[in-house]
Length: 221
Image 1 (tube, helix red, strand yellow):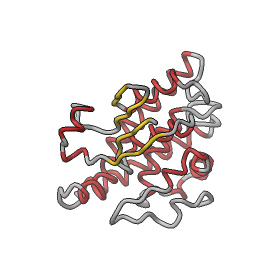
Image 2 (image 1 turned 180 degrees about the vertical axis):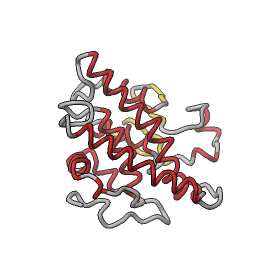
Image 3 (image 1 turned 90 degrees about the vertical axis):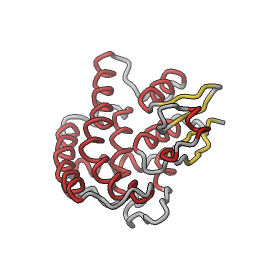
Image 4 (image 1 turned 135 degrees about the vertical axis):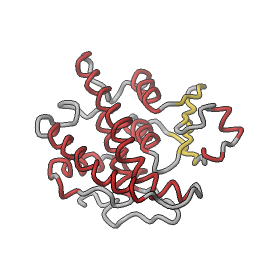
């Protein structure tokens, strides 16, 4: 069985978990306190980051690389388009959420509100929290713009782009930091994607000291 070293609210880990689940790959989840720099974990990934996936005799890191490896080696169901333009758009949007959205929103909200307490790094920086709360509005509007023109974020089929976005938004939703009333289009997209069987383990996550809101696991909000 595959083994994934992860932390529950990491969007990068969640993206890999969603990909594994969608492809029906059984996987043992091992929560890894990577900030403690455990020597055994550092041997698996000298970068000291999660996720780390052990599968088919390999140990792999970096979520985007892991997801594309899974797509190539477990091609059904497909999470990347067959045409080069479509694959480009998926990769562009995955990078958008994992880089820009993460920098401007996730790191300012989830990391400040949750990670600092878990890692015993002090109190949230109110400036960062306010910055993240402002920035998410712009990103939700951009998602609405895309979804007004497409069935899914990158086109007519669900792809890794949707999983990347859902991974970040689900982490934020766990701490009630998504205004779902801002866009019915985005809310309907998220309801559709979180209703998939692949999302079940995500919705079952529990972080000690941080109970999720009542709507978090409600498929109809």
